[in-house]
Image (cartoon, rainbow, N blue to C red; front, side, top):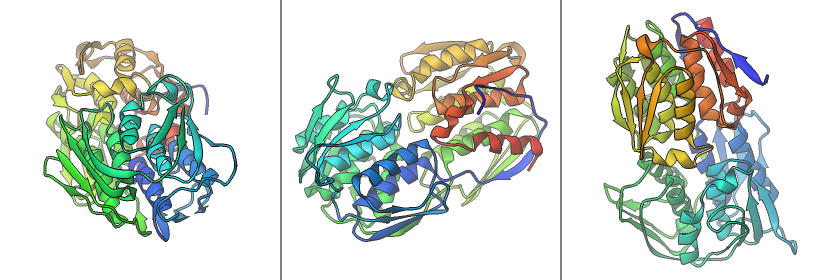
Length: 435
């Protein structure tokens, strides 16, 4: 893809789309399939940089993975509870780019593996903290060595059987630390019990993890408020699983319909039955004035003549913050987004990136702790600007929306969308074609 992409405003549209499979579901199903007893088949998985890094790591470990790039399904021969060690004298070296989910889930899975491993990523990954996962794993007996700055990648992990037990955890920067512990819980002697002294960040992602574990044969006992989760010792069992479309990626097209008056977008395959918390973004758009129809397996958003600003806590769906921030440019009145402090440790410091790039477009942006305040440009007239994307797929995808409504928006490094949605701009083109 070109180094920059100039966008043009589009006319009102009426489309039905089915985005590719969920990254979050694919990246949970892959390690569970590898750890299961028996074979698994994943239908409609996501093929993107993040999932390719995880697949490449599993293959490098010796897991039998069948399915080439873009295939409609992936078949995986389960290893019966422990990832292989390679049989050599030195460590197996694995590199997962900037795929945070892959790094965290692999860290836990390798800790109960059969070999010695070194796990690394790109420079940004080495800036993303991992201590809130490695600390609890060490409490369970894991042999993990920091190869650089304490509490950050890269890591050397010597796999071995681990004891289970009870862990008490405070608030974490990422729900993925909790999900990683849950995923290996059944493989620990005696299982695992987690209790929490504070609120869970991104709670729907923890609920998603528990749902995927159930689909592979392990049912955890969880209190209604998820203050305590008990995972029994047991075995994952291979199975067939269909991956839902990605709700996070669907949000961009629902948002496009909301900001372009008279537009309508129907997302197929997602609805009130979804296990993905980000389907809740449609309700935020409804609060802003969009018309929303939610079925069991579809979501439809129709854009109003005028949107209004909103105050919302996105702790449960922080990946929606950038999408909402761009929608806020075209709303009447300010928008306040609370509970998103963990955006600072994502692919980039997303709070600071939003402040800079929204400012280029004419918005006034204030950051107060974990809260983002956005005052749209006067009369919602944005200024022409080249948007820096910080090697962050969600910066590129969300700010593309501004270019569908306003003149003069250019996206730098549009190819970074390959991290989770390589075909994103082909889908965007379908909006202008009205189909």
